[in-house]
Image (cartoon, rainbow, N blue to C red; front, side):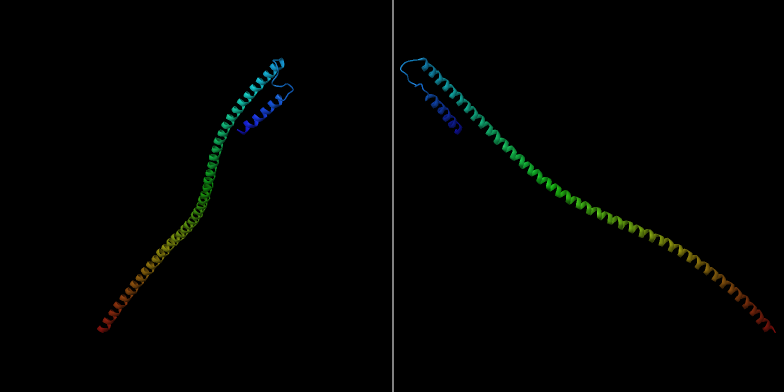
Length: 181
């Protein structure tokens, strides 16, 4: 509306300037000058009407553009909100990823520690198995040695008994020879 009033004033101002020319609007009789004034007035009137239509068209265009601007601003705000939501989601995802990486690193350290403990336990088991085998061999060897010694001692006892039996028999024979005498 304000643009209309500005244009209206300027139009009427230019009309006033034209009207304030040397030729008066009213004259005593029809003249060629009056006809040219009349045609100037109708030309001016048609220009004013044309400018009025242009102003109305421009105002309609401004309203349309304002609606489009409001729509675009609404879309822009929804896009800004979406970007903010996505940024928040991205930040959350990055935070969760950092936590997951930390947890994965912790699990990796635990795995490495457990693997090391397992290898150590396996080495201890192998060493214990070697010791068991060695101890068994020692026991078998000692058992064989003891059995051999026992066998030798039995043989020695049997020989000693046999010798003792032989002496006893000799003594019995001598005794019986002495007794016979």
